[in-house]
Image (tube, rainbow, N blue to C red; front, side):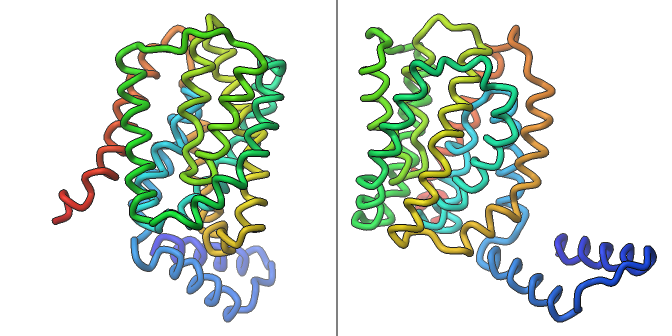
Length: 282
């Protein structure tokens, strides 16, 4: 309904400005196609989830995929969820990356990203082979465990080396292609250092930027992503960009603990929803 109202307004403005609008049949076909993308879920629930995810990504630099993944896996199915989430995430990464790249630790992030991409085909094979219901539970369980680890203050104590970063990247790449949630091992590894918040945020943004486009290509190569799942992400993208912009304005390195706690609470709720969805909905 919202999309239809906006397109009607666009046609009216174009008519007033003397601009020839597209053929009505083309517009009606586009509206019908967009409506079909959300036929089983409605538009507002995905829209609200995406906007909140954008806020988290903008002020904390992470958490958006972990929020969207369990909810979208329930709404759209695990396979479509991955392509939709990654399409949205890639667009936001493109927006945030120019400001983040100068603060990134490329010595760690570069090799980690390359190995993650090389490990993605294994994750794609698992996605095609494993029961879809199990994947939904796995996505949600990973998020709940990650939140518990972060909340208790447990951190990686090993040496932050290129080799260790590559090992983390391999695990993350498999998880990303199987569940779209490849962030937890990377976040726990990167946040173990003594870098300032700006460096943490830049490293996370750059890692996502370097791995998301290859993941989309791999999903298409293995026949796991369709045009519809990408189109759904593009329809929701403006809400994500708006949320990320607002979140970036709210970002203040002095409030790192507040951002972290708010993000963890939201992520725990999303993970718990995915795990308990069958019980909650009867």
